[in-house]
Each structure stands twice: as structure tokens, then as C-alpha cells.
Length: 305
Image: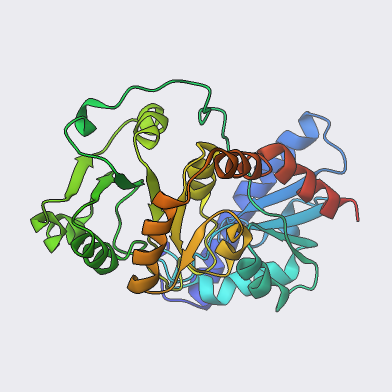
């Protein structure tokens, strides 16, 4: 259905789908004896667009945790429908100030509730051995762990940074997209790609780094993105050097924020030279304020206002 032209035809079939979905949901809710229930819409623009016509929830909440509008699947219909859906909901909660700022243009009851992160695996009291893939990579290791995606990461920035600091090892851990796989980063002797790893191995790889990077490419997709990765880095007590965005301002006191290659060069040098036990402790404490418990409490406080 997503391939249909935007407008009347799409809306006709989308309403039919919504009616089928929520008539069934309402039937099950009635069988379970649910009363005064809340419909929580997690970025579900199409399937929930007409939910208010069929579900009769006591409260409808739209959770905007990503800017979906520039993404391929969503770009045909979402630019028209998401603002309308935001306006129809009783409440909108978002995980960054930028996403909340967009939503508030269409619904004054829009709030930034922050982001929850499961940090249970990122425990500095656990001793990790250096992964085999990193044993022959000399310290200091400056690294990134995650999806190595050219839509979200600035490959040229990483290249210039690594080229300017041959005395450091730069470690990229994760699955590469086509641009990164063919990028001249692979020609630098101090840049190492370790490939994809299981999620359970992430803390082990993170522990082997001296500085962690989040070199975002600033665009429509990333500008309001909440970087859960940074909380994971901080929970491990690691110095973090990251691209400056509005959302990253939340981390200003605990990360080195950069807007240029020169700032990245200076920040990586400082991150290595200024590290201390006290800074490590403060990073860990700060990351632990971003738990799912705190996030859910923020959402609940918005619901009962």
C-alpha cells in the first residue's frame, strides 16, 4: 500500500486497514475487561492514523523517537500524515528537544521526556580481557562501535582525523555499508575494521578502547537523534568525543563536543591526556541517570498532568 500515490487513494485503503486493526484490538480489549486504556503510538504513523475513530481510548499518546520523514519508506506519505497525527493526539512525548520542538508546532502538549537505556551490561566492575580481534592493535585505541552507516557517520571526518594522528589506532567495530567498505579509510595503516560482533560482546570491545567516538554526520535524520551509544560509552567510564548537535548539548559536561576536524583533533588529544578516576566516576554516574525507569517516570508525569 505504501507504493500508492499520496492522497485520496492511499487514505482510503489506510482507513480500511486501520478499521480492521482497531476493531480487532477493541474486541480483545473488551474481552480482557480493559477500561479507560491508553493508546501509546510508537512512531506508528500509518497503522495508527485513524485509531481514534475506532479504538475509543481514554487517552492517545504519540511517541516521536525518530525523525522518520527523510527515510525512504516514509518519505511519500509521512510528511503529510505525521503532523496531522501529532495534532490529533492528546499528548506527544519525544526523546530529544529537537523532536519535541517539531511536534510542538502541531500540538502544544508536546514534551521532551529524554531516553531510556538498558545499561545493565555496561558494568565497570566486570573485568574484560582484550578481544582477540584487538590484541594486535596498539594503544591508544580510539574507537567507534555500532552500525557503520554513511547516512549517520561522517566517513571523511574519520579519515582526516585518523590521517592526522598516525600515533593513535582507530578501531571501527560493526557492519559497514557500501560507502564505508570502499572508502579510503581502508588505506590507512592505523585504521582497523573488526567487523560485526554479537551485542553481548560490545562491553568487552568497549573496555579495550581508551577513547570512544560518535562522529555523526549532521543531517535531517541525525540532527534530533538521541545517541544511546553515548550513554553506553559513558556507563563504561570512557572519554567520549562526539559531533556537536542540539541533543548532544545534554552531554556537554561529560563529553568533548566538536564541530570541525580541528576540534576533533584537539578533543581526542585532550581526552587521552585529561582522563582521571574522578572524570570516569562522573561519567558513570551521569549515564546511570538515563535509565528506562527514569524515562518511564517522565512519561507518566506527562500523562497525569
